Length: 199
Length: 95
Image 1 (spheres, rainbow over the protein chains, first blue to last red):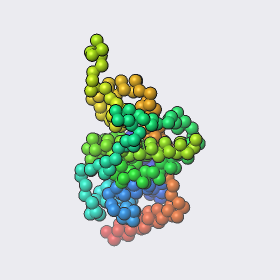
Image 2: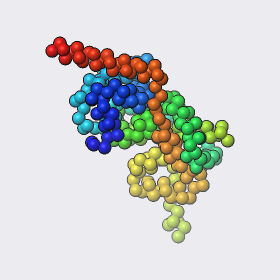
Image 3: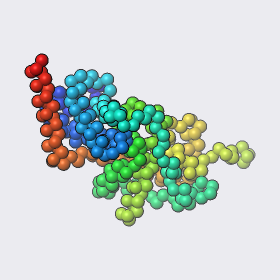
Image 4: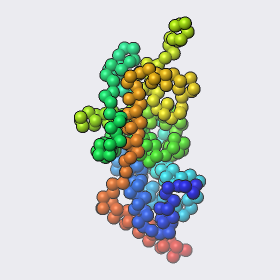
């Protein structure tokens, strides 16, 4: 996979450049924590898992063969460490909340919008607004049910493909879509309320 | 003629369209479902905005730079790296 965006960093790390390690941490630490948090019961355990995963990265990087993207390999190490920490094995992922993604009271009995979304989508590419809202989205991702948070982190923050996400989390495409749908819908609500307060 | 054109039970309402947004964006709808979804969007005043907001949310989320290590954390990563390095060298020397 010669086009892997991380290959320069990986090459530097292999050559013994400690700053490359810090740059990788800068890029992935927060997402690794979100991912670990989806598997273990507390933030403290997630931090241990992630630290352990970084040591696994250092030990394994010399043998990494680009059979997957670097980030898929990295996130897979996190998941494996979390599982072998013996906390919670979960091959099939239940949907962890059953609330509708848009409040039911916003539709009439026939299912048509009664309180339709206030338009803001065309303002979302304003750089100042985007910067402000992005910070809010990061904390909102932390507040998502953990399984939704990990899918949104991998897919939308880190930009993995749906296939990569399924491989990292060992879940089906259908499962991934349900979690993604719920996570994105909640984030949309957060953005909506941010725009509501900007106006 | 009207009976032929309008097929009761086949067209989507807004609540259903909202539920299908991710499957639509992921290309996971069947051709028939996709046509129904798009037909609803064409005829609906509000659902196109909802879809645009989901797209905007994805773009905003993708624009986040997760890097926010404190200088203390950077120091800890350097420390972690050097300890690993020292261990490796020790191991190599012991062999």
